[in-house]
Image (cartoon, rainbow, N blue to C red; front, side):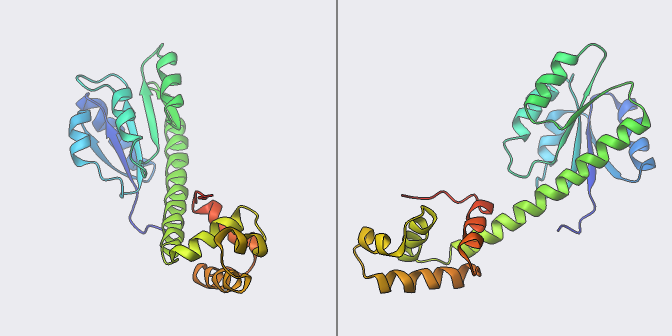
Length: 207
């Protein structure tokens, strides 16, 4: 889990609104950083920093939705909250379809803001923990030799040892040895544990 304090990133071209929103964010217990344009934010963006992004829809040159499209390409993009004006429901719905976790009209209350930010920060924390766990599992998987990976793939495909031996043209004893080394390197003890690890790692099975 990251020990870095989460930041609420505010991207809006209205200086007065950015300032007032920054003060509100501080009042609900979070630090913020403000940016006056999508370009300014992209230059400073670091996906490894925890937090969330509050993003205005209407901005010159690069709109909020266009910026959102760029950001969601990053594997660790913080959760995005979209700011909309009155009557922009269709825009908000598009933002939600693109992965925004919430939208706020600019007449939002402090309660609405707190609720959206706290949910976004909690989601970001969960996502980052899952990402770190996945990377750790992938590091373990990278320790496997090619023959061990072949056995792992066939075990996950549901093949018994005898059929694996036949498929790989090796002895059943060789399969058992490789399977044992796979379990040791991946630090698992049962087949269900092995399957769970593969799922958590997003492993693609090469049949």
